[in-house]
Image (cartoon, each protein chain N blue to C red):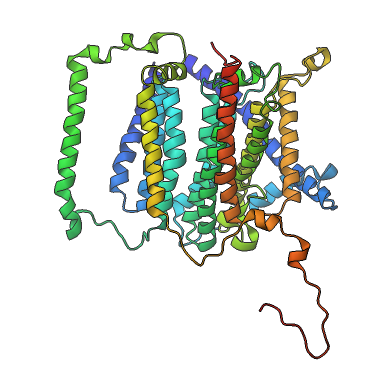
Length: 332
Length: 210
């Protein structure tokens, strides 16, 4: 009986986290399209509901009632597994995101490594989908995406090392608390910029959306998917984008800390600040999508390996020497 | 405790079955996916015994990077042609003796390791390690790696670097006649280099690209 109680409590907590995440993923799609439209002097989705707020729900309904087509020459098990893997990986990462000092589902010691590991597993959904479709365009898209995500993971890893040097712990709450006096975006500003660009590449967002470049590959790895399976890829992708924004907010923008540490601001719960910071980063994501043209593939690889990796490695050396020289290394 | 045991058996059964399926499945790509499943369940086992850092590094390095490249290569092979025929094929029967010898060797090595553990328990005396103190797994790993074993650690890093440089040197070839792009050149192009204004005479035209 006691076990059952614990299980129910945990399930309740998980639902309390997952349902808002899923709803906000749907809303964020709407926000993305609106921002994109406003930059281009269009209206965007504005018909369904007030300001078009219910557009994503209408889209979801449409996807649910569409027929799921499984190509006869595809590898069926892996074909069906691919969107499930994408979606699951995008959602399980939220378990370690701290919304305040106590509001976190799993406060594990290696939180940032867990986030990094889950985001590096995200490539499997895409590879599986691309390979199992047994068709040219998905396969090309999958190969592109595999190379791209592996490359940019390296620079994200090195950037995380920069932050960890200043914190001295892998726990996400410790990372947030270490920024109480100064957000890391100020001393590590170049790393923040590189993290943002790498996050764009890691989530296959424009200008790095080569895996689904519609001009060359139809829709890349999603070409053969339809109905709810396509929607799951889509949701997983946006949940990943939100996750990357949350990671950026926690690593550089002080997570759930309020920007000004004085009375009226400290009353606002930490979750609100974190959500505002995530929204700010997502707004930047949406702006970039609207204003930047797509990269060419060799330029993308050059940027990752020849520019970001050496630069962030040099910055690790600089940060470490600075901390060591001024005796600021965190100890516990 | 019961929940712990249940999780342990679930993960270890998945690990063993997927390890068998790596060799038994007929499709090479499926083998790689089973290998990935094996890695994941082993990292879950690592986390269960409290080695959370090792488990996460296993996920990041093996599953997130090595297995992706592995899958990448295997997907390029033509799976349809090389149906895995196991013992039936004449070619593969040659490999069986070699495989048997190697697997016997590995088996005896494991026996020796486990035997040493069983009959000389002080080899793996937990009290000697830092695992009992209150600091976290990651900290204690770092404290051992960067103090007592710093030279071994650095040398192993060097070996990996040399291997990487070696692989690049072996596969690198300078091809002639390839058009290369210089970003500096492209950005620093001026209008005078790109545009030429010509006076065109009627009925004569202009010769471009000579």
